[in-house]
Amino acid sequence: MEYVNSKEAMRMLSIKSTTTLMKYESEGKIKPTRILGSNRKRYKVVDLQKILKGY
Image 1 (spheres, rainbow, N blue to C red):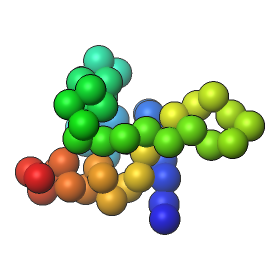
Image 2: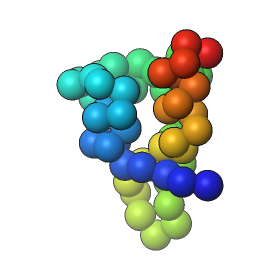
Image 3: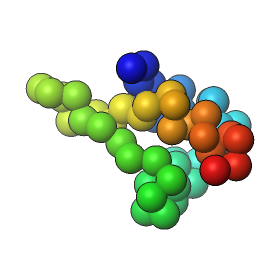
Image 4: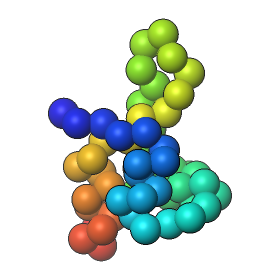
């Protein structure tokens, strides 16, 4: 499974605001994963592609 960071996720979704990314999280459209030993969020590419397709 492939993961991307917030910046790459925003680029894939063509959004410029982290607020929009957090909105997708709160709506349950995407679920961030935290990599062990890191506090940074990672997003599944598959989930981002679903948003792009309108699911």
